[in-house]
Length: 222
Image (cartoon, rainbow, N blue to C red; front, top):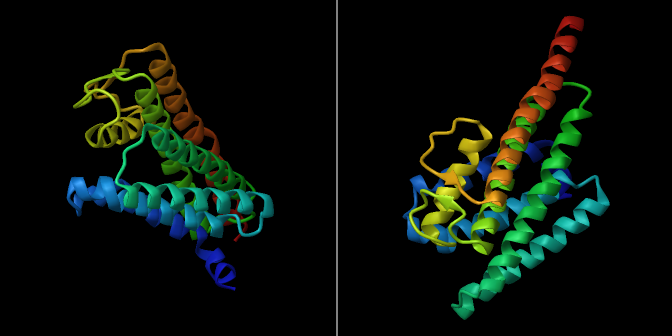
C-alpha cells in the first residue's frame, strides 16, 4: 500500500536521495560521511529503487536482494570494525549492479512515457545522475584492483579521500568538462573514462531529445 502511494513520486524520491549522496559532504564532516552516513544513504537510495520497480516484479526481486546484501555488508563492517578488501569488492559490485539496473529502468520508463510531466523530468535528471554514479563505481573498482590508475588522486589505492576525488572525476568526465586535475593513466582507466563520457553524450543527445520532442508534440496538441 505504501509503495503504491509512493509510486507517483518514485523519481522525485530517487532524485533527492541522489542529491544528498552527491552533496552531503557539504553538510557533514568528511570522516563521518565516508564511514557512516554515505553507506546509510546508499542503503536508502537502494530502498527507493523498490518504488521505481514496483510494477516490474523481476527487477523488484533483484533490488530486494541487493538491499538485503547491502544492509548485511554495512552491518558486518560497522559491528565487526574490520576493513576487509573482499567486502569492498562485494559492496561496489552491488552498487554497480543496482545503478546499472536502475538507470536502464528509468530510461525505459522515461522513453515510454506517453506524456511529459514533472515526474518524467525528475526521471530524466535521475537517470543522468545515475550514469555518473555508474562511472564512479567503475573508477573505484579500477583503482581498487589496480592502484595508481589515476594521476591526481590524493593517495594511491582505495581511500576515503580518493572516493571523493573519483566521484568528482566521474561527473566531470560525464559532463565532458575535463579540467585535467585527475588523469587516467592505465589502459583500462582510459577506456572506462571514454565510455562514461560517450554514455553521457548519448544520454543527452538521444534520451533528452526524445523527451523534449514529446513535450513539444503534446504542447502543440494542447
